[in-house]
Image (tube, rainbow, N blue to C red; front, side, top):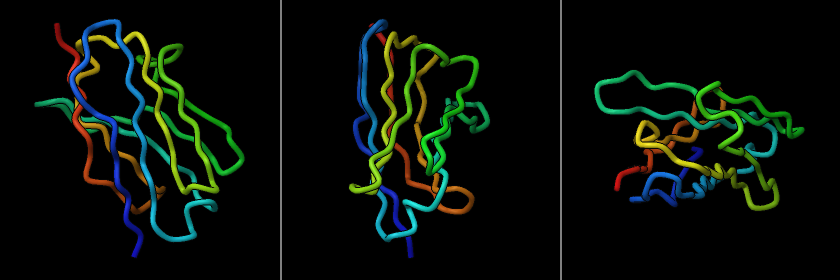
Length: 112
């Protein structure tokens, strides 16, 4: 059974930065695409970024140029560096080991 544990969420002022981490148990991490999703109150869960095992990345238009996804296969960890945060980035952020494993999420609140 694969488990994903996110960390790094919290309260940050607009314009600030946070780095989220997601560590996976099990060895299949390094063979899978990883993704970050987010879900704001009252909204559907949306895809934020993906990274393949080879390091190719994609981003939602709303975060391009501000967020960076990366991975460390030796540590079974995927990261999401979030810069220039906006109030509309407030959400619970989830990592996903594509296609079928989810973490429980970490809350990011952007507010002054």
